[in-house]
Length: 201
Image (tube, rainbow, N blue to C red):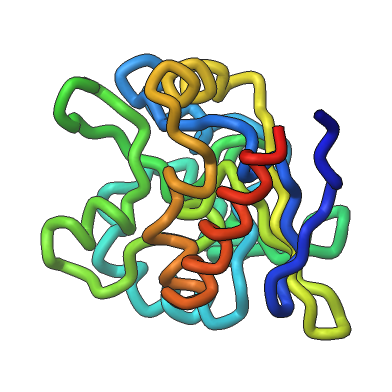
């Protein structure tokens, strides 16, 4: 059965791929490659830029010399070709806040220096929300609407495979992040819509 491509809950437009597709990060295989691939940094808000600037001293020593040089020159963020505010990058692809570290079952992963400091209790800022919400991309429209799209990146194939194996829909994998952004009632309505949508299949 073909699903309608876009649903709306409140002021949020949702791609049905978020309901029908599966995803679960597999850091043991990808090693956090999303931090060091791409042609632009992670989307950020002005508030997040201020939070990153406030926490910069905490993570500074975890950053590479190249990343420090970029930040000294242009700051923690810049405006990309599409006019979006994004984190600064090194060599045209690596986020300046990438560092290396070990996590359970995934040695020598690319990590966010902010998230590392947050988990160590050194900082109140974890990381840009766009990173936490990935593989969902969020777009703010001028009329107050927000759009949520499922972004499929070739480097995340292992995440799609793991999600399919475990039967975890994208929206359930990102439940905490969606609740944080839109609230429990909104997420509950999303779950109800998802159940009805999948029943119709």
